[in-house]
Each structure stands twice: as C-alpha cells, then as structure tokens.
Image (tube, helix red, strand yellow):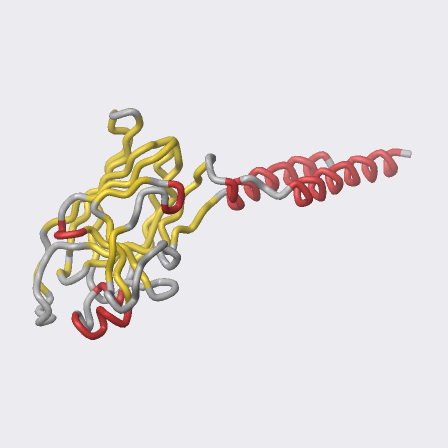
Length: 210
C-alpha cells in the first residue's frame, strides 16, 4: 500500500506538469487576415514578447509558395510562425520552460537552426537542429527557467521549389510552461478530487490493518 501511495503522489506531480504546459498554435493571433496571408506576431500573444516572428496562412502560401515548408510545416489549424527575412527571431517574457516545438525549413533542405535559451542575459542552453522542408519534426528541448529564446537559421541546400530561396524556418505548436499564465493553474475541483482520492487510499490502508 505504501508503494501505491508513492506511485499516486508521483502521478500527481506528473499530472501537474502536464496540465501546466501551454501549446501556442499561432491559429488565434489577433488581427491577422487570411487574405493578406501573413502578419507579425504581436507582443503579448501567448503571454510572451515576439521579435521578428510572423505568421503565415495556408491558403496564401499554397498559391504563392506551393510545396514549401510554409504549407508542409502546418501541424494544427491553418497558420504557422516563421522568422522574417531569415534573420534571428526572439521570444521573451517572464520565466518559462521551453518544452519543444515542431520545426520545418521553408525552402532549404538540411537547414540549420541554432536555438539558445537565456536567463537575465546569461546563456543557459544552446542546441542546433537540422530540418527539411517536406514535413515538420518535433524537437524536445527542455530549456528550464529561461526568460528569452533566440532562433537563428542558416545554411542548407535550396530545394529548387521555384518560389525563391532563403534560410527561413517554420515553427508550429510551440510548447512552454508559463507560470504567469492563468491556464497553467490546475482547476481547484480537479485538485480536490486528487486529494480526496489520496485520503481515501489512506483510509483503505488503515481498514486493512484492522
């Protein structure tokens, strides 16, 4: 029974960490127009600040950049994020954990993306990933306790899509733990249910002792 109690407590810890994860899909960026096809990601979206991140709409890019990562990189909905002009892009805010995201190259195969995590200006994490334009790839990062992410894409080989070239990357379903967000707080009713279950298990343990 003691072993079950420890397992139960472990499940609570895992559950809380999962519940606190936010998936930023870029499908609800305020003010964007599908007809225009792209727009900047404004500060405050997802509780974060954004620098040189844009969103791209599926229909527009199917017409103007067919077969590119702007279309192939969509994981959910009809919008994805990308770094404008293939230049470095930043995400910042209060302390958060960067769990991971889906990445795709816009036009180049074997595109390199340097991803760095900072806290108060100090570099804590650094990783380089390689992506292609054909489909999105999920990458786990687990950058914990940071306040800034920097993405820098470069290199790769032009895939010959006939829609221009460039070292842009595409990103979707950015997943973070942001303690400042209301959605990261577990619902009180669910917490009560877990506590009640645990108390019930303890009572059952005492009953078996009699």
